[in-house]
Length: 305
Image (cartoon, rainbow, N blue to C red; front, side, top):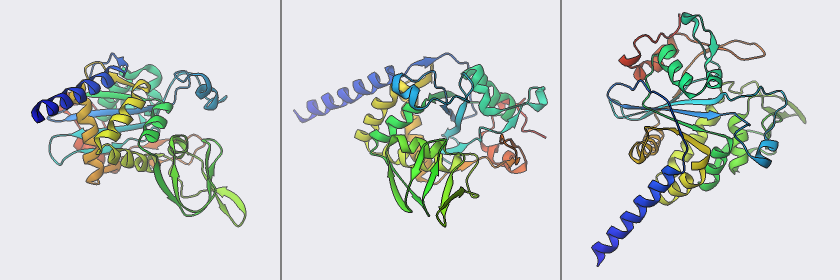
């Protein structure tokens, strides 16, 4: 009887997981693949067109161009040597100069997911095996299903552009909407001597805030029930390559947990220009950070001058 009950539970869990995967829309992309490991390209889209009703109004930006760009770009490597590792690529990284197609890499998503995959390979030398794209609401739903995330500030912080509002110093437990504002904050202000002033220490890549959220979501995945709730809630707001499966998506979740638990989470260093529209340029540090992700399938990929 006990064995039969265990079998029923396993079948129920697998069935639920398969249904969750089917809830995630697919996209048609050709991936160059990596060398001896699995590399996932994880993107957060800034598209308002994919949002519905109140969400489209809430996140409307009259100065935002139509189409979609990659707000966040992550590479997750699982398997191979060194264990799972998660690397954030600045969306403002200037690439394509060697092909006479200079652009900020985050803008490439305007041309579609295939263009992002191709740019990773052609411009950075990184061959990916799978692609997952989330929109605004996907992150909100995942954070809410995980029970929120916690951040700490030295004083009051706000960002009128992203909607961030943390009126006191100390620890803040954020729900999905404020977690999104925390991640998207690009021009935060801090309150000093009764005045709001620009935060000179702000991270122009958004990577530090995003990594905080990613770490806590990855920790939450370790609880199977929470992982199921997160996946079920966020699934319709995600897109996946058509070659992904329950096995590969399970590998993605477990890889995120392994990378964050081991502290193997980093950002591609870059030299930022002090311009109104930030631009990040490759240097020797950038090449070193990307080296573990390079693939022979993308041998033409060059990492800048």
